[in-house]
Length: 282
Image 1 (cartoon, rainbow, N blue to C red):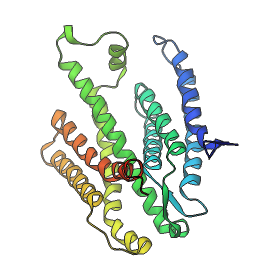
Image 2 (image 1 turned 135 degrees about the horizontal axis):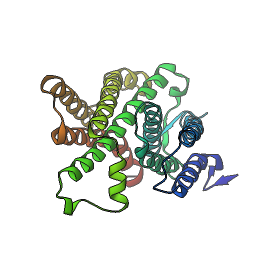
Image 3 (image 1 turned 120 degrees about the horizontal axis):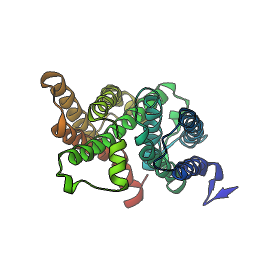
């Protein structure tokens, strides 16, 4: 069975995410989650992640070759981000972040059904080293994307703490902010994401030269994608050095993270979006 020219199973991950979000929305807001309910939700999320991962792999590494585009990139980012959240949720009280990560995964998982991407390299499917490079790149961007979302949440949380009581949001927004972990816990998780993501981004950026020559028969070209990737890497490196040397934190660190992530997004998903959707080139 095909829908819009795509096998119906490609719609399965986003459908499962949607169903889970609907089930979670039925739970009374004031009711505290039991341990068994939380464990059940984590089990369901794990199963959906498996389905999402299999669908992604089959849609990227096809019989024709390596197929990729901005939609596949964002779907991978969401998958990696949700996987990291799932793992951290066993050790940190971050259940209040569940809605955001699931919603992001649901939206991104459906994008490859609409935007098919393009055939990048027939040789990549049979090259295990390129597959390793691709996985490392996807995981690094996914972790840094989750770090950027995390930084946005911390900005909202910090702003709410410094507002006058009369300006603090009320209703569901206030309840959601109150359910977020303390800022120190949020900051600890944020820098765990940054350390892991930056390490993998370093491997990605500096192994790009080898794979560009081996698979695409051309050396590394300093186009806008490469330049933005290097700018992003430099900003993340500067942030972590400043954190180590002077203990950089707070709003300055959050702004630095978001600036570095914008450059990273322009380098990867942004450049592919312009080529595929605006210029109609793969």
